[in-house]
Length: 329
Image 1 (cartoon, rainbow, N blue to C red):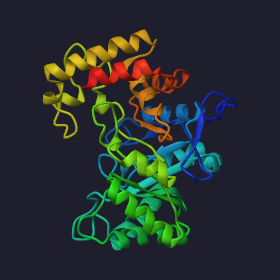
Image 2: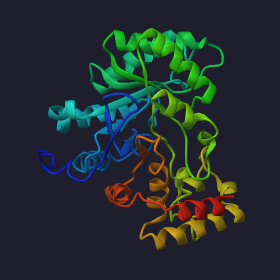
Image 3: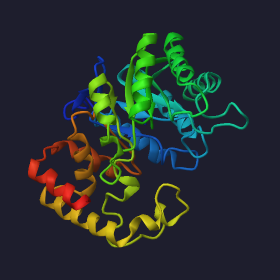
């Protein structure tokens, strides 16, 4: 059955300017970190992507190693783009990253020019694209001069393989230096992708100020703390959940009694706002003026729709914000 995009896809989604650029991003963007790999159900991921586009989500975020296996999320996106979304390519913002381990040997990770540009070529081939809209350095490299890493990003733009560049997981000091180098090369840093949620607020210790002052956008990942900021664990650990497996991002120790007291208090306040805990957690991030878009994952169409509904209520009073801060202390 052929896909026909909804004619009302831009009616409800809000779009925010990314830093000082001319680019607008949807308030909610879709990350293909989980549920889009070679081990996942293809029809389900296809349904999620197409429904996301119908809801006005124009930004799909990937990395070279997303899967599993690594690279398979990009390959799956290629199939969906070519079969259903080819005529809408100019309506999409597609990003990928390089930085983590992707292949064996000394050139398969980190931030060298060799690795970044080779990885981008591989990503473009996997996705069947001539260019990506945003290419990121996925993490700072302690072994490679920052100038080399930023020069590689600049080269990607000069070669027509990326329209914009960004960085991810860089701290405030590293970000300031990266922005300086890119500006000197004539390729501004468009955006930063940090981990940020109610339980992980490191970006508030300088990074958000740097981004605001330098005109760089911000698109936080892991806004729901790998499911901790949802109703999933309110009554214990459900059988078969990711936390019950060998997840390196969330484990049973994260669900200690003190943390669960906070989660339940946050959930009660979310209910008073007429939202789910996940919706309030997303709205709390989008309330920050430095934030351009929030990056969500989705395991089903219904979960996607519920998270997108967040944009219907993004307002917080000062008293609310203070109350939430008091819970999180």
